[in-house]
Image (cartoon, rainbow, N blue to C red; front, top):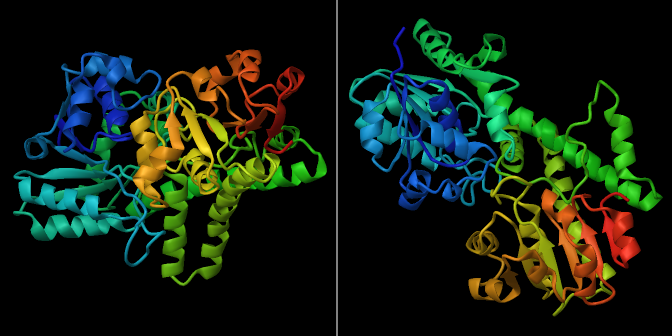
Amino acid sequence: MKTIKSICCIGAGYVGGPTMSVIAQKNPNIKVTVVDLNQQRIADWNDQDLSKLPIFEPGLDQVVEEARGRNLFFSTQVDEAIDEADMIFISVNTPTKTYGKGVGMAADLKYVELCARQIARVATSDKIVVEKSTLPVRTAQAIKSILDHTGNGVKFQILSNPEFLAEGTAMTDLANPDRVLIGGEQTPEGKKAIEALVNIYGAWVPKTQILTTNLWSSELSKLVANAFLAQRVSSINAISELCEATEANVEEVAKAIGMDSRIGPKFLKASVGFGGSCFQKDILNLVYISKSLGLNEVADYWEQVIIMNNHQRNRFANNIVSNLYNTVSGKKIAFLGWAFKKDTNDTRESAAIYVADKLIDEQAQISVYDPKVSATQMQSDLNYLNTRTETENKTYLKTKTDPYKALESAHAIAVLTEWDEFKDYDWQRIYEAMIKPAFVFDGRNVLDQEQLKAIGFQVQSIGK
C-alpha cells in the first residue's frame, strides 16, 4: 500500500480548514497543504494574529498554531499542491442550484467539476481523490469519469469521506468523532485507497469508530443523517406551535419525550428554525433524488421538513408584527445574533436573514449585534436573497459592534442566535433605554423569561 506523504485540500472553508488542521496536527509526518483561490482567505489563515482566522471555531486557533509552518500550509498555488500530493481532498462549496434543471433543490456541482478537471489537467502521478464536500449520490462516478477521460494516463481512486461536523463544536467533533465514514470502490485498488485514508484517521481515531462502505452508501449516509436531524428540529418546532395554542410548555414536553431512551434529548430544542450549510441543502438534495427516481411520496415526506422550517421562521416574524399592533413600519427592531447558531461565524441559511427580510418588507428598521459576524457579511446575506436593491437593504439594516447601542431606542428585541453572552447583559439598563412597551421575542429560548417580565418586558418565547 502506498504511503501518504503529502495531502492537498482544495477549499479553505468551514470544512477544509478545520479538518486539515486536525489531520496535520495528528499526523506530523504528513505535509498538509490547504489551497484556495481566494487570496484574502489564505492571507487570513496565514496571519500571525490568530484572532483573524477566517473561520471561528473554539479551539481552532490552538491547533493551527501548533501545526502551521511545521506540516500545515495554506496557499493559493493550487496546481503545485495538486501535483505534489498523494491524496487530494475536494472541499469546495456545493450550493443548491439557482438556475436550470433541479433549481432550488439539486446541488450545484460546477465547483466540484472544475476541481476534477483541474486535478486531471495537473496530475502527473497516481492520486487518491477524496470527496469531502456534501455531494449527491453518484457524484463519485462523475468525478471518476472526468478524471479517467481527461487525465494524462495517471490512475485515480475516488473515495467518499463525508463530514459530520456541527459548527461551534467542530474541533471537539474532529478530535472525538462518533464515527468516520469512508466509502470506496470494492476493488483491490479501491480497498487499498480506503486503507490509506483509514490509517490517516487511525492516528487518533479508534479503528472501531472508522466505518468503511461502498461509495453510494457513504454518499447517501451524509444526506440521510442530516435529514434525520433536521426532521427532529422541525418536529419539535411543529409541537411548539401547538404548545403556544394550548398553554403547554415546549421545553417540558421536550424533556419528557427526550427521556425516552428510544428518542433521546438531542435536537429537540424548539427555536425559530434550523440554518447552516447542510440541513436544508441536503434535504432538498434528497427530495430531488427521490423525485428523479419517481419516488414522489418519499420526496413529499422529506420536503415537509423544509416547509415546516420555513413556516417557523415566517411565524416568528409575523408574531413580531402582530404584537407590535400590526405595524412595524418605521419601528426599530433589534436583533441579537445573526449567525445560524452560537460559537460560529457561519451565517448560511440563518433564520435571522429571513426574519429580517420579512420585517423589512414591512418597512421595519433592523439593528443587529452579533459578536462574530461582520457588517459586510450581514449585508451580503440580505443582498443574496435579491428581494430589493442593495441600497434599500443598507437603508433598512444597520449593524452595531456594541450590543447596548444596537438595542437602544428599540421597540422590540428579537433573539436569533443563542450566544451565551446574551444571558449576562444588564437587562434593566436595556429596558430603560427602549421604547415602551418594550418587547422581547426570544427565538432561541435562552433568556430568563420571568426575570425579564419582572423588569417590565413584554416577553414572547417559542412554544410557551
